[in-house]
Image (cartoon, rainbow over all chains, first blue to last red; front, side):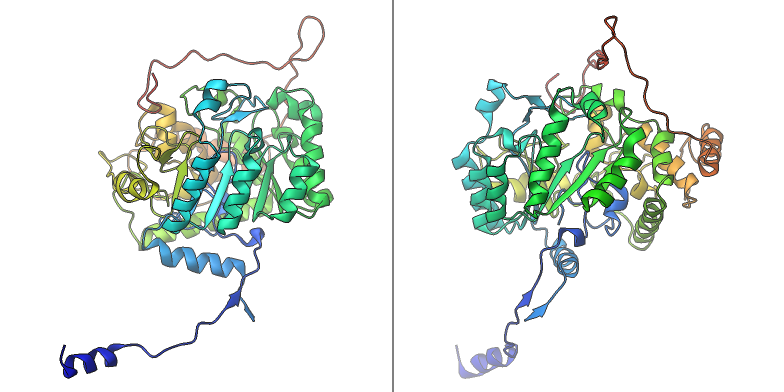
Length: 60
Length: 424
């Protein structure tokens, strides 16, 4: 690898951004998707679910 | 440290990763054995079913599975059954999963909850626990479960969990034996117990294709009457239907048989190590004992998800999907055909839409839409429901000759055969 190629590769690298930690309180009442399992949840409990994208089996 | 709400985290996380097709959400049935014999249940087997127990994944197999799931990127797990605590080793399996870092929800009937189990769950806290309450009174509850004493056991289990501050929510299935107690159940759970409550009236046949659960399924008018009885529920239906209709109109659905997250972000594994697109799907499975979860997810399940519709049915272009519940798994169980519309679902969806004044966009040859053969009947029923002239009566008790109340069980002749469960 010549110096020109190596320099180009260094310039393509994104600047370093320090990872940030965020705390997420686990609150099941804020779950955005409901399960479609029989006798669990359907309809209004999926009120934030958009069917074309996802319909999960869990409270997630 | 900055705090991000769980709702915001989950929505952003799932939306972003859905495009990459990762198995984020898994449902694991640890057993189909259960101490109850609920009439509506789609999969229960007797506790003493030795043949079934012998075929269940053992502890070591569950641990290997969990290792694979963690490696594949799964984060959310739902443990269900049957009854999860029917397995003596369930807490061992659960603890292994907790140590792997999964966010775990437990579905249980609550009757086998002990203080020892609850104390263990305090030490290894699940993300959520959901118990199904089959009735508010002993008579109603046990009319569905068929097991004397089960009501008291369930209520005891609920109390044990609540006393320890565990994340419990209660729910019920709205069926013919308990529909008269749904509003009271909601008040009891929300006001007296202070926990979340939800109910669902969608009942489907058993995974072995027995139609017996349909004996207690509500009529469409009864389902929608329950919706209208709760203004909050009605509003949520309307908002949900509007959101889904808007999503369909702005982003046309694919021509795939499955339109849900199954095989995209979610999967199910039965007690015997078979991977499928969801717990209700019995027709197409992959044996992870003979292969690996990764191969099953990347190969088999991906192919299942890519299956395209074979013919245009009235479901393909229907914007009432939000209030319907039709899915290929339902179709397979009802008729053996994943694409065949389920009449009960279609009828209920159109009635619900008319009663809640949700727009119904023409979607092909549908008998419930305007101009269809049954439209006038459904429109009339919707009018009666809006006027509040439909009443919810308690089911009549069935009296045996000796004067004792007994549970009436109707034996439905086995269907001639289907392409769903593959066993007949």
